[in-house]
Length: 103
Image (tube, rainbow, N blue to C red; front, side, top):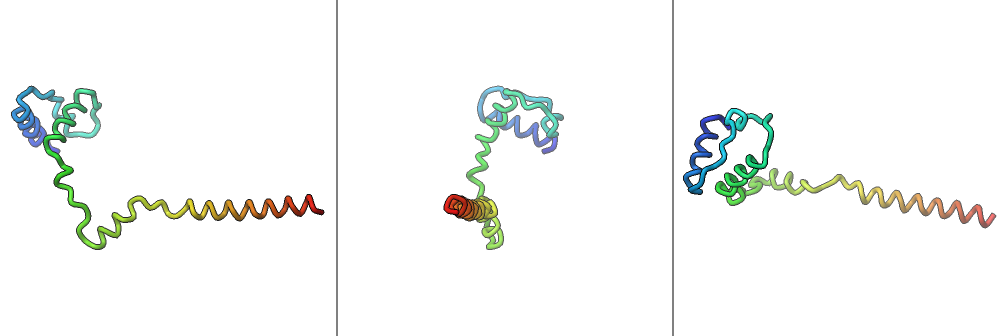
């Protein structure tokens, strides 16, 4: 976000809420190396609630995008493989213990 855009957004927010909005150093607002204070978080929260970006999100539209987003929670199938390996090791251990005690 550039400096002019940040000033416009804060000005619009002040006008729409009818209250004064805490205005950080806008040079810092435009870079990501600033300290996020409680006041700053409140201001960002107000701005986000005014913009309502969740109403504009549409999700994936192409088949490729839908396939890609369907894999967002996929962890690689590690847990089922780990469970199967654990079962096999337990069976082998039990077989070895039974062999030692029966011998």
